Amino acid sequence: MEIPKNHPRYGSLKKREALLNFYDKGVVTVSGLISHGRGEAFDYLMGERSQAFSLNAEKAALEKLLKSERAVISVNGNVAALAGEEIVKLARRYGILVEANIFYWSRERIEKIVSYFRDLGMEILGLNQDANIPGLESNRGRCESRGIFSADTVVIPLEDGDRAEALKKMGKFIITIDLNPLSRTSRFGDITIVDDVERAFKNLNNLREPEYAGTLNAYENGKNTEMAIRFIGERMSSITNWPDL
Ligand code: ATP
Image (tube, rainbow, N blue to C red):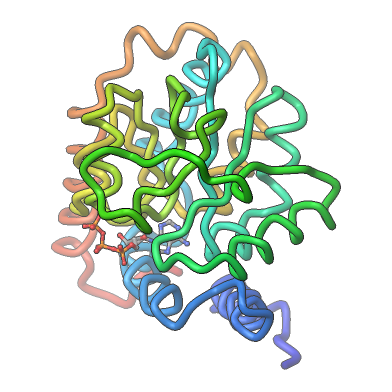
C-alpha cells in the first residue's frame, strides 16, 4: 500500500504495514497484532512521541546496560518487526547480547526471528533453549542458560506480566519498554520505559555519553512512571479541541 508521507497517521500506518509483512512471514502472531492495538491506543494518548518521562528512563537504562556484567535484550515477533534494525545497531555498538524469546512458543518462529537477525548481520541467541525461568510453565519459561537465564539485566520490550514477574523473582534487573504505564510488566520494571519500542531503541542509539552518564543514581522509577500516568490523565482532561497529532 502506498502511504503518502504527509498523511497524518503516516508513522502509525507504516508500523501496521511492517507488522502485517512480518505476520505474512510467520514472525508476528495474530495475538501480536492485537497487542499492538493496545499499544497504539496508549501511544495516541501520549501524542505519538517520546516524552520527558520516556527519555529520563531511556538515559538511565542506557547507563545501566553499560554498567551491567551480562545484559540481554529479549526479542519477540513484534519487537523484531518494529525495532530489529535499531536493536542490531545498539547491540553491536555496546556488545549487548540479544535473545529471541516468545510468548506463544514454536521452534519455527524462533528460527524465523533468529534468521531475520542473521539477515541483518547479527547472530542472536534463542535456538538452544536449555534452561527454564522458574515459576513459569515449560514453554513460556524456555530460555538459554548463556543468555536470559544467566543475565544480570534483561530488557523486555512488549513483555507479558507473568514473565516479567518471574524474571524479577530470579533477581534480575528489569528494563521494560511498554506504552502502557499501567500494565503489569510496567509495574515490575526496575526501569520502566513508557515509549514505543522503535522510538525507544532509536533514542538509545542517539544518546551520547554526556547525556546519560550520571543519570542512573538520581533516577527514581516510581516517580517517573507516575509522571507518565499523570501526563496521560492531564492530556485527556485538558483536551477540549482536537488534539495536535
Ligand atoms: P501485562 O501482562 O504486562 O499487563 P498486557 O496483557 O496488557 O500486559 P500484552 O498483550 O501481553 O499486554 O503485551 C502487549 C503490551 O505491549 C501492551 O501493554 C502494549 O501496551 C505494549 N505495546 C504494544 N505495542 C507496543 C509498541 N509498539 N511499543 C511499546 N509497547 C507496545
